[in-house]
Image 1 (cartoon, one colour):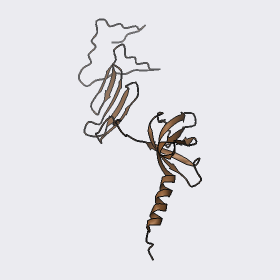
Image 2 (cartoon, one colour; image 1 turned 30 degrees about the vertical axis):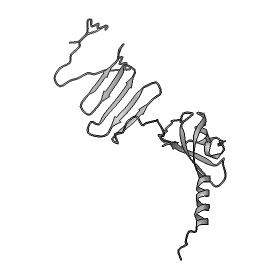
Image 3 (tube, rainbow, N blue to C red; image 1 turned 90 degrees about the vertical axis):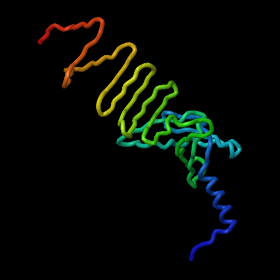
Image 4 (cartoon, rainbow, N blue to C red; image 1 turned 180 degrees about the vertical axis):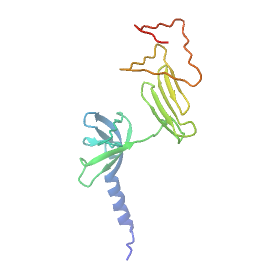
Amino acid sequence: MPQILTRTSVTELAKLLRDYIKVGEISSIDPAKHTARVVFPEDDNSTSYDLPVLCRNSLANHDYAMPDVGEDALCLFLPGGAESGFILGTFYAGDVEPPTVNPDQREIVFQDGTLIRYDRGESHALDVVIGDTTIHVDRQSITEHAPQSITTDAGATVTVSAGTSITLKAPQIVLDTPSTII
């Protein structure tokens, strides 16, 4: 026979959910343990114990990303109490907006402005931007720009081949080699 929820049982269920699912703000991090503490303003500013931060992989593949102090966090607590829980993740709230609104893009923007973006849509492009240095890779080409220099260092052989032409353009070209075969 189905159970009917009463006003009392709904109130009790809501209280249980408030004890198990909480939103707070990251107050400190322990990068070596991949844990953080969270303060809960709606719970008299109580602070959690060190809670593990969930990640995508931790065995054969490894993923590491710590939340920043001050980020809003969603936490899940187990029936064992305030020390038995996890930080499920952080989320965009208030004036903090995501770096892209394109569902085909995965984008990471670091505090110093460095950007890594992959677009799985029509372009299938990977972009990396570090200051004035840029790398763009798609299905047709690789383009790179650096304000100082680009260095390729291989232990054995570097082979450059092209179907049409190779252009070297510079005010000066230096070949530093004991042997040249043409």
